[in-house]
Image (tube, rainbow, N blue to C red):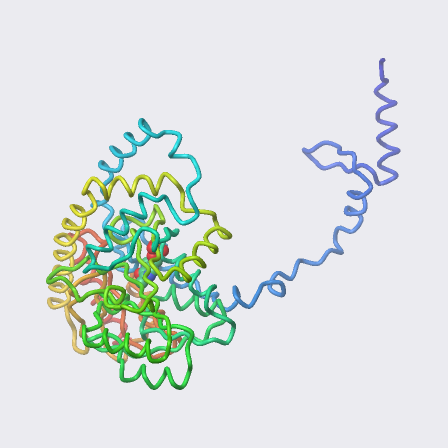
Length: 445
Ligand code: PMP
């Protein structure tokens, strides 16, 4: 059937008159449905969607992006003391490649199958083995659930225990990620000050009576951000208080294995004989963050809740990551790697301590952490904090300002957190030199 061109044009003209076609430069002519026609008539009268009225309290209560903004500044020539990232040049890439090849050859299909919600059982066995190495934490594989990083463990703990208005006790300062998560769940986050022996248990006691918290969140070993470790005596005092007040303790232990002197005191989980401690840890600090694998070891009733949340949230940790890590541990590579990190990070810490000494200015002090990732550095009181971030940034150095680590953010704190594991050893001294120049400039301003 031949269609006359003028007939077609005429038909289109009729459709256009009825508002049923629309023509745009470059897109040709489109025939519109009734609904599309209606929409096109309404153009110009549609209001933008008021997104902010739709968001829940939970997401609007934590809109602070400063940390993410600073952490993003790690590329190019920037010397970063900001993140909590292990040294990339030490990642066991070759070994992982070898294991991966073997896995592909031996169990290509298993690699891409789903795993149990609680985690790949052999990895749970391997984690149970690693826990025994941590001063005898006794947790059978069935006491462990594999998670997408310990960050997920914090989120699940919040979802399991916190109702809006509940109180959670944390150290002050503490890991900013935990503050964000607990607050987002509607918790009032109350801080307990720390000193060189960790959380001040004398202060904690009165807070427990006053606030009746749902749980105590603590980073007892090489704390983030301060680097301090809770003394053995205080560990017993903390456990005793928890038993007396019937309070769970959420122990976050990403750094305990990375010690640079003597073996640290045992984790709370190893000292707890009554099942009060929920223990979180991760492969993010000893290996790398990118695989996103951590775990929780907890009493069975609590573990069942973690597993249930895991199933609802994302079913399970990705299978290849779990198989890779399990093989890495079983071959003895994990222990060898940790031994290497202890040496390397001790050296980087020493370089930073030496540089701080060399370039120090009046009013500055810092601690010497025995493990972990951070030096907690106190600056002169008259520093203008937001200007320091900018002035250091101009010189190509980034770090995290202390206030991020306080539950109320307004402590007038003059600490900064300096990470020594990520920057290359040859950059560390240079970075401290520039940072101290920036401090001097900011004090004077
Ligand atoms: N807890 C603490 C104290 C941390 O420092 C970190 C990482 N910065 C995490 C939890 C989360 O680690 P991940 O989710 O990577 O295991």
